[in-house]
Length: 415
Image 1 (cartoon, rainbow, N blue to C red):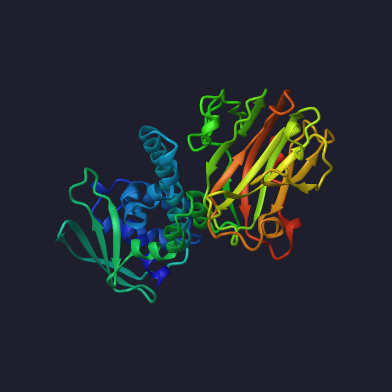
Image 2 (image 1 turned 30 degrees about the vertical axis):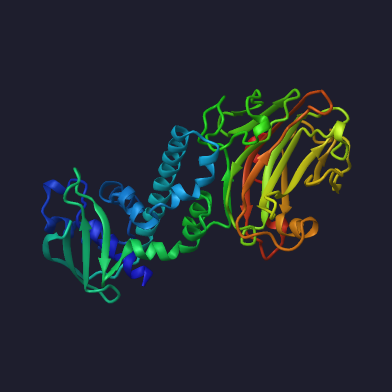
């Protein structure tokens, strides 16, 4: 059914969308389509891109599919951003959704144009049905339905496709069903875009859309005690962006709300580099609890609303693979992933198994929707200085062949 619906929109789009549709008759459009399909080999990449860009109203189509999902998935930010900044964030994410879904449709179109068995196309009627302009097509094919209805908005400045109806089924409804789990659980946009491309990993953050010298709109110092402190973080890098951290005693946690299922994507990878370790830093001791770079993963909250979280650190003094926590109540368990100055000044690639680490120190399986990530480079306890850098956070499905099959993706940072 899915292929039938997608193929249907492809032909509807092509019928109505030659590069200069206003200057050519529908018969010429059909002829151009048939000419393309008769060529061997078919070269469909360019026309696929052109047709989607010119004739599909991607924003209206997305609204029909995803509704209020995007705004609701960002709901946590309402408590920490001003209304103006929240609306800017929604707009930024909407642009990202439009572009990523556009690419998916281009890919679908290109794939299906190269395998169609179309025999004949003809328009049987054109008119207004309620608030929509409709074009009904008769299709002769071994695999397509006979009748397809193209839906357009006659009130829009540019007449564009906003949906397609095939045998009483809308294309938008097909996509709603396909991404139902993500929409229902309000997983973050990176989860949705990973599913668009059938990727084995979610690109949680690569800092690519933020200009140098600024902070991403969706990262901030959410703790009350951090409000008003100087911000020790900013985006840097030319071809590859990263987050720079330089702390001289302010100890500000930078957080981002990120919701994904750690049971489906239990592995986390990232790149980081420490350039100045706080002297004598020791994560066990209150007056030495500083790390050049540290990463929190916040899974959920307990009944007291205390975060269930784990922390991964580059320790100044503790041995590699140390696991522990300070004795004070509600302190997070930490895992030492790098130690001392052995790899100082060099980008390191890290892989952690969130599901196993959660079971080891927090008990049982994690909840099926994370809260987010936190970053902390601090030197307040040692009254010194810490400097480090973070880049390219990804969550992965568990590969059948083991963790070693996940390749180091920090190479571009080392050039």
